Image (cartoon, rainbow, N blue to C red):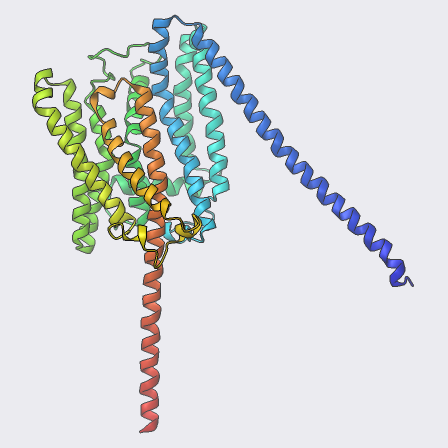
Length: 437
């Protein structure tokens, strides 16, 4: 038999071997990750280089018009990709903060985690710019018909993936999204938290849907890569009546949700919330009137009305975000953290976080309303930047909105438990009294 002294070399060699194997596996995983990152940067460099060279081949006059058109087809999907990335960050923070978002959104057991959301966002980040690069390259090299097919194929592929009926590409999550969208469009049932949460996000993406409508319109009418952009009489031009109609749809969906909520609960808060969304309607349509009235009428009458409605919508929305969606009780929690939120722990209990969120929310609310101004419609880079800022505002809004809902659910659970305990104590006291008698 081997003594304990004889076993020591065996144990030590096994440990060394096991440690070496683990180090080898870890090195392989780390190398694989580094290779992925390296390939991603190489791909990004190639796309930028090919795209830049393709644009530089065009004349200066054609270049501006073409970039304007190319931007229309691809900026909506780029913004959607950004929102998917941000939603993955939201889910990661919820998981770190022990916020049970699965229960809040009533998700299935096979719901997407933040890692899977980021995986989807990574593929979107690769596919959309690749299609855009191919579009620029083919058009600059005279292959106009092939160039025109690139955004069409991309949009068809995205639509097919969403409605694909087979159990691949996260079937349950895709159908959960489609069901929620259907419930938003037709609020014929009781409104769940996921219904109005997604509808609120859609209001921040109103410009995305407007550009999607214009892109699909140009594809249907075979205007892709035709540079028929600034024509006022164009079916899909900048003066189209469809633009304000699509912009207002997310706000109308949310408005109808509030009315449905009032019908079910008879809470007056739902009516005040509906009034908030109704204030966005005059902002959108008064702005669109600039293209359909005389300049004098716009300057002297409609523009002051637009400014007044913009201020009302921005301030009302800001007030609702702070006092209702976040439940900050008229800013008192900025200075008094008697019962701090989970997010305040996550951000190290810093009061400046709440000051920043409130201040930035006010500024970006006003900026988002200003974006609806008609004279910015052709300044696509400015509008794109403002849309990105609005999505960042909605991204930080989501933290406090979900946290507030989680706190409400916990409060209800605690109240129900306390009522149950009181009932049990009363029953016990009655039983003991009966025994004493």
